[in-house]
Length: 366
Image 1 (cartoon, rainbow, N blue to C red):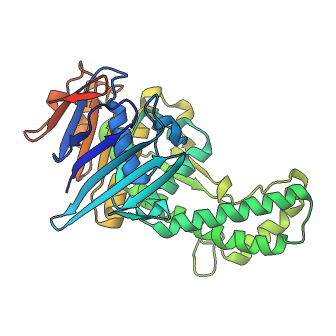
Image 2 (image 1 turned 180 degrees about the horizontal axis):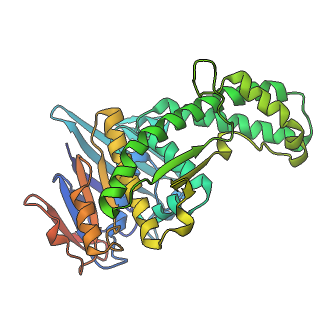
Image 3 (image 1 turned 90 degrees about the vertical axis):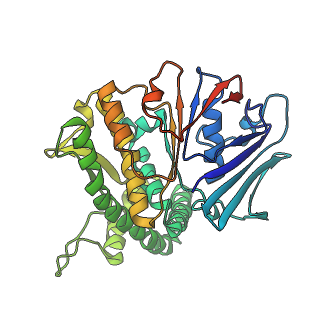
């Protein structure tokens, strides 16, 4: 079920007031810098209440203006149309769902389940460990709102623990260690299950496009697994507390917490060796794209819902053969929004019902 309409007020350089997004597939075609990505950004903004391009809301306002807003209508079923509004006024942001102000962004995450494919996704393959942790956490947060609370609680406790380590006031360490172990263990176990399930999808799609078999995602938690008498590999809270106690003196010396989910490592492995150090730029780019494909499939399997795919010029860097294979194997989706440069062969991918907008200087034309 599709978006119906989106209205804009002082959002980036967008000049039109309203855009019809009622088709299952919509392509935005234009030269660089004309506003194609701005439309995808507005869709993402309605989905999550934040931008994928900046964390500073004031940077989104059209030059010379002080406020902005977007309104999105999304048809979840024949009898269920949701309205999401994001209003930025006087330096403050307000998010409304069906006319009511929400207190937490997580209340809208499952309203318009969007998955973004962008150039910056390359960091999931080649970036720092925190980038891959972010990807796994995002994949879980798409359908499990309790995971958002688990992460928030863990980060809050971690911040408090690091503060007392810096202050050399250790009176609350035992209490904080118990809380850190409690929430950290929940996160570790959920990540482990998610990556196991993810591997059932990712390796297959990578092999299908590249012909390279055996690539997998390897999870190495900072708190190592222990095998109990029943053969279970999940550590218990007392195991984690033991680890934290043994490493306490080192944490005191370094004035920071050196173990926990914030130190987990997630890598791509083939034949028991790290794959990224020897992979080509093209292979790394493909990995980042296929992670999003796998994320979409994973979301559908976990939630029973189909996502909205936002693809921001990501096919441009693939050779024609891989581009054709990727477009042919895209996961099931409610809607697909793509941006293209005028010279790209987007006509090959469209269907009879695909709507194409030409974008120029912030305006669109059919």
